[in-house]
Length: 236
Length: 73
Image (cartoon, rainbow over all chains, first blue to last red):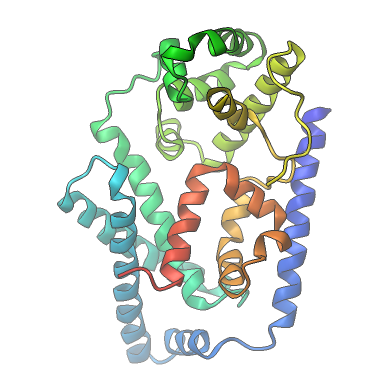
């Protein structure tokens, strides 16, 4: 029942956010001039459409290059690989945009909507790329890494030793096999969530929700045993 | 107590969190509103809560915001 209530709450929040956005759409009587130009040229004559697609691809490629550069600090990739990802992302984003252009409802500027596609493409491709150079085993479960994952200083071990032991016990006791698999991959083995999505053939939302439930259960167990405070409404 | 607080923060879940699917579906609208009005987080608490907790979605949000703000070069 708690799970059902939580899902209902998440759905309610989504409905509230959607309602706020619906108000925005209703309030937007016309498209901004730039979006209107894009839609007119993409829906124009064959020559106009081709020219617009070339222009859009140029913009998407620029955004993709910028985005891979922005993320490159924590990636083990060389220049040519990043360049390749940027080109693939721009190409795939253009295909997705042309396929879904009828779904653009004017809630945002057209370019913001279009940029979202190329950002997601970069994100997904970087996630899949993780496994090319990774030496992580999905089966490995090294609990000695846990303190380091949370920046727990060895010098202060007496302060956190019992808490870490209690967390390990809670993982054993309250998580399902699937929740444990995802907790171990992300927390102990440091697998990025998007890389895990690619490895498990899942999607980001499903992995996030599994981890969300695992975190909630672990916190409740630790709180019940006096290791953490009971969760109350959170201040942002 | 900085050490314990990192684990404490990680295990906290926000009931307002809408999840990745909803946040990503509405991300372009959220970003445009945020560019025009920094108080967007108050109008879309479910998305804001999600972006605080989800690393990958937050990374996408930062990328889209940079692109829209003209920081992409």
